[in-house]
Structure formats: structure tokens, C-alpha cells
Length: 341
Picture 1 (cartoon, rainbow, N blue to C red):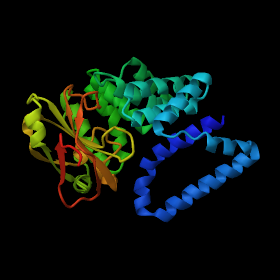
Picture 2: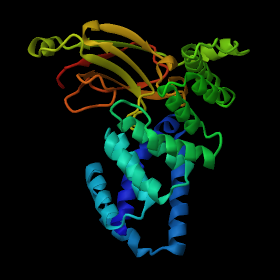
Picture 3: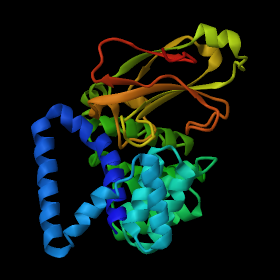
Picture 4: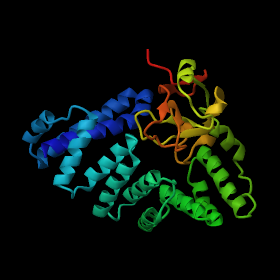
């Protein structure tokens, strides 16, 4: 049990780094106070219902690295599989490590143990989407989304995923109708991007766009906040040594530092477009629930992908990641193939 506690602590800290970092930049006192309060509360609760001696055992059992923690968590779950929180933690960690198929399997195990948790159902469906080769929600993922909505009607992420499945399956009018209630629930920047998706679905269905929103101008202005100018080039020495096809895909990605691998903004180009200068903003978000305009910091990378898949695959080449504080005044330069000094 002590080993499992140590693993959970290490993996949870790894996930929390990405969550707490923006708040740390805003108010270190608040973060420190919150962590101390959480620690004291946990310790007090453990003194009441737990075994204090296990704290020392957990400290002694602390894995040496994230990879070791993942391996030990797998071992613990194999020995005692009836731990939904453990499977959920494993799924989140594997997703943050860019292993969507393994993450999807872990979330599926968690759902078997907690079949009526709407947030878990949505996480499992989203993981299954990222693990799918064609990036489509299959029957199982859709069933999870629908069950999540039956447990919590109006769940925003479940509603968004339901609309995606409807549009993917050739029902754009239904997708637009599913998404429309979200316009009054999300912030103005998200609403502006969501409106674009709704109008695109309505156009596919042969319907006119939505009537103009009363606050459309402020929403458009807000959506441009934290826009990033990015310059992407291929290292000349690398280009002279390696033969690449001109149609090789180049992804330019902004993501949350230390967070999940899913981008908050992404653009797709080809190798023959290099060198190029582009602007990443809220309009480049693949999901309307997370925007550049809402962040204080992002990590930028450029990726050469032979498969054309936005999720990292074996053999892909990435530039050195650059962490940027938002808003950024100067362009960010990314070089593909450059060797580390």
C-alpha cells in the first residue's frame, strides 16, 4: 500500500505541475498556501483514519522517475485491479506521455469500475477518440458520451463530443443543433470559435448561418488575445544530409507546458512551405474548451510527420520546445533538425 501511495503522489504531482504553473505565475502565495493547506488536511485525515507508519514506508518506496512510477502503478493495478482512481491516474499519465492507445485502455478499465461517473465517461471517450487511427468517435465512445449526458444533462465536454460524432457520421444539422446551447454557457472567446464550427456544420447541411450575435465584435476582439507569431525553418545542415519529401506534413503546435499532449492551437503545413511565418490564435484551436486567450504560458514545437497524424508517432522529428509567456511581443523561432549545442 505504501508503494501505491508513493506512485500516486509522484504521478499526481507530474499532472499538477501543468495545472498549477499558470496560477504560480499569477500568485505564488496562493499556490503555496493551497498546497500547504491540502497537505495539512491530507495529513490530518490520514492520522485519523490511516496508519501513520505507512507515511514513512511511502517515502522510502518513492519511485526514482516518472517511468518507474508508471511501471510500478501497472504492477500494483495488475495485483489489485479494482482501483478506478488508479486506472484513471494511469490513463491521464499515459495521455500526457503521448501514448493515446494505452491511455484509452486504462480509462476503459476505470469505466468498468465507475460506469456512471460523467467526467470519467467523457475522459474515456476522448481518449478513445485520440487513440483512433481515423480520429473518429466509435460506437463505444458515443455510448459513453450519451451515458454521461444521461447522468449529467448539459455536460459541456460531452455535448461537444456528441456534436462531433453527429458531424462525423454525416448529420451536420444535428451537430449544429447540439452545439448551439453551448453558446450561452461558454466565455465570449470560446463562443466566437464555437459559432464558426456551428456555421460550418449548418453550411454542410444547406442551412443559413446563425443570426449575428449582439456581442459579436467584442468576442472577435477577445479571440485574438495572446495570438502568437511563429517562424518555422529547416536546419540547413540537416536538410543537406537528409532527403525528405516535399509533401511531408509539418505541424506547428502550442500546448500547455507539462500538461496533456493535446494542442490548444495547431496549424498544418507541408515541408515545401518552409521557411514560413504564421500566426497561432484561438481560431487554430481543435477544441473550443481550451483557448490561447485564456492562458498565461504555452510551449511551442514544430513537428515533421511522415504519417500526417497530429499525434506524435515513432520516427517523427520535433524542434526544440520553446516555452513562451503570453502575450508574446516578439516572434518565436522554431528550427527543425537543429542539433543541441
